[in-house]
Image 1 (cartoon, rainbow, N blue to C red):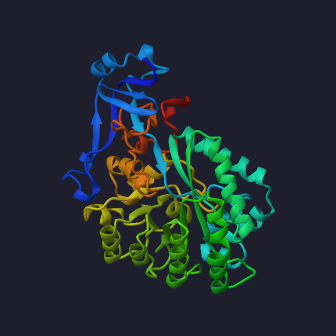
Image 2: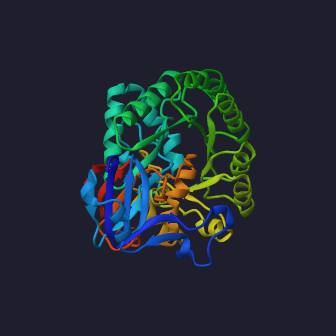
Image 3: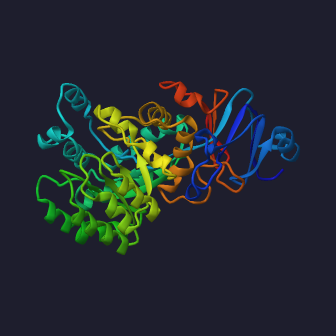
Length: 417
């Protein structure tokens, strides 16, 4: 059959996606959020899921021997490729010593005040060649892919000037074009206040210098801002996001990580695609996000790396909302695998494996405005699938620290395994 990219058959479990639309609330049982099939098969034709169902029915219409890739998934689980909607994966330098300092009791803010943290990475990135940044990012993408991530958002934000922010975005584009992962670029010029200026003057620079140059470059899809204590105020953040909208960049926001300044309310006000972190958010904040259609993105790896508290996932889910999970991979949170984020979501935030799976796939896709079926294996969705060497999706969080992914397909092509 012409165009038959792949057939995966005899899967012990095949996770198609969520069973409900998040705007209609969750089923009574949290584990019922997943559409799971047993002894199931999947056919991908011309990069797109063409059929999913019982093995006998799918293979009768799409014989595995006619496929470019045929996978016997006996005893294994097939999942949509993981979507990681919040990373800072393009950077240079090493900050492992700061991890050790945190274990000795230093806080994130203390390290930042001493010239470490984001500003330390900024100095390393400014000194790095474009080739180094591309090579670093490609390496990180290779690790992510091997662990089942097929779509990832990557932010700039370690430049804090026009030329370096554009250099970072160019590196994201170059690495993404040569990689099997779908890489989604975000401009985060308002990540921190550089050492050579103050916050108000720097926001002026972001709005009048960086955003026009970034828009002219034509790479970034989103404009993000770090609205929190020690970073940018609500008013400063509003200026950046509204200016980004004028240049066609959809807003995203780092909100309520350290203090509740009103960042979540700002996200609702400007119609942000996502609001991320949310450790200090109130019930009213979360209600505002849900009513405005803003996807909450929770980052359990950050809490794990900082030894801090986890966001309240149950408050969001029990109110009938949806949420996304992400790794927040960066020099301060050196975890690149969505399987680890899923495990932490279960053990640290009280999510069920089914809820965490939805949050790492379909709902994570919503956090980067991917509405074409990304994060699901419904008919018509992109043919991004992973095969896990375990009989059910529960084994992903049940087996932390091990990579159970044996095969990764993107657009129906076998790209790993």
